[in-house]
Image (tube, rainbow, N blue to C red; front, side, top):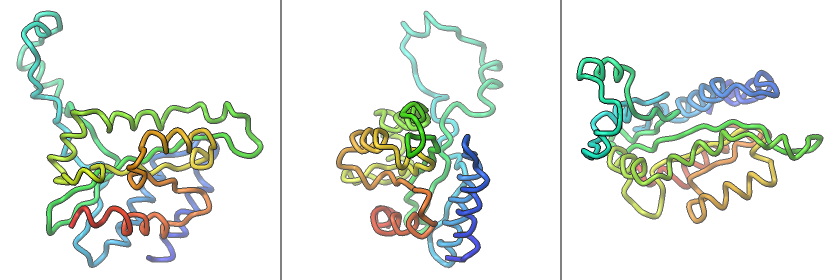
Length: 208
């Protein structure tokens, strides 16, 4: 991996500030993997559109339709221009097998030295719980072709002080249970090397 990309990780830590800049973090993760994947069958995509229109054709029951707003077809089509679905932060694809691992980046403050426990009150990490819903889980598996039940079809990378927060580490570990390889705490003392090593060691095989 190029030295400049690992230095980029350090630059992100400096630039992010106390509030954090998730957009910068996303771009840095993308840069790290683009460098790591050079000359391989793997590619990383920034905000893939595979699930952009996921909800648009969901069939509702007559009972539900009778109780909600139902615009005409032209109005509905116009409202759906930007897509009724989900946009993961990134995806990693094996171009030979066509298998895709979808990914989310969650950056959040946390309770660490010199802070009160209330510093960990953010809820960015809670928004990843949508990934565990039956519908999204099924769609991720069908579109990404990762059907092996021993692994989840998505990967969550967490950044910021939440990665050292004693409560949040326990909470997230409890949520994922035996699927502990499906999340990664990208702690401030780490470079892109540890991130790529986690993928190579625990997740890459499911894309082969």
